[in-house]
Length: 122
Image (cartoon, rainbow, N blue to C red; front, side, top):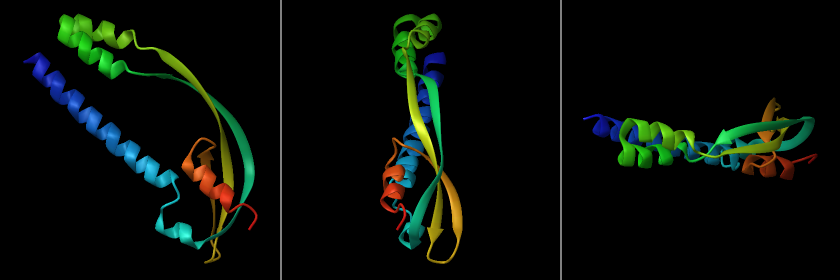
């Protein structure tokens, strides 16, 4: 019974994760309706960010749970490697043809950053 509940939980978490990732990629790629109204952008600040992320903990936990039950699931998740990522976050002033100006902060590793850079100083 525990394994079935764990399987349902993992399936739900995985679905939510992929839904959020798809939404973020659409947001960052410059495909929003109001993007057609952007006339120019200007960089107002740059901040360096570094963070550590554990990768593959869910998959290792599932395999560990199958092989060794609850203890195996915990050990599998705990053995997942941690990776340190660093990136710069740029804050842009975005000007629209309607006269509106908004601040937007994006990672330099995103599609949204590339889109906003293409509008720089125009």
